[in-house]
Length: 432
Image (cartoon, rainbow, N blue to C red; front, side, top):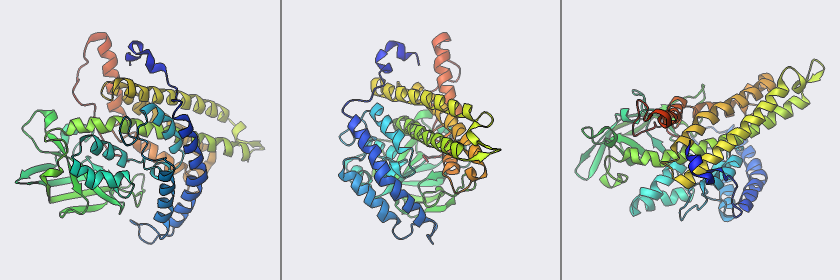
């Protein structure tokens, strides 16, 4: 991360004056519209009869909030330097922290994964026809999407291992293979997949993979079932096991060109990784708030729980770590704005390695202060922990990102470190 010495502007982490009113409006919208909406949304969901669907009224509630957000101009913030979003990564970081405090915050503003990464890809490399068919309804929040990369029989943190074949047959590609932990593919609103597959097995290792658009209703595409995370199926969003058997799609569904899958992955994963970390800060702030509220008002052995043992130190450490993580995330976002996604990859890997681990610890401490209630359905903490623990695997496991940071640091002293390659890893889960 020595680039900071050569680029002192990386230390300017202030939100732009133009975006400050926007942050205030987002914060108010979350409190006044999203918070009451999601409470009713989840209450209705608890009574639904279709596990992989929605109860009557659920989507109407969410769609009403989305319509209000769009009307207010609180929409599609995640695309920097484009005709669609226009926010810098740094400005979006401040907003994403607020979204991370609310389970439906990001979706209410059409800023939720895995759609954000898919929209970024389509916006940057999609053909006019691909944009018209898939990007436009995604940007309008009318459909959902998924990214299919992870496979059950290979270590998908090394994307060179991806085995699913896509063979050109005239004007079509034929796909055969399996994917799993495909986040969002259980949602009935999910209409399109971006699939990482091998099209050029004889090419250079980093030119074998391509990415192809596959509609969810394509003949031969089977949703085998959900993969559970800590025993939960996350319905109706889901992390699905998919089987492709002689799935045929038009050759025009290819993105950018054969053998350019790695190039596309780095395009989407840089912003995607940092977006996870931005939202994680918000989750950590929410957990600390719950910890303090519980600790102040619950008593044991004649004292507030917060005054027992080292619980006050937990509060201190949580605040210090949240602030440190926030500063790192802001600097990584600033690095992407100043240096570009490729040159900022060490900053992005740094926060991806650090932030979810620290947020997991803060949520775990909050669970401990709540006692048994902390792991129950009466608080959001168990779900929050599950999500943050999963992110330590998604978009590259911790170890991949630590290797990226260490490799760069060693190279500053002794030249390139052993094992340097063109890729810095990829999804284990395909974008929760």
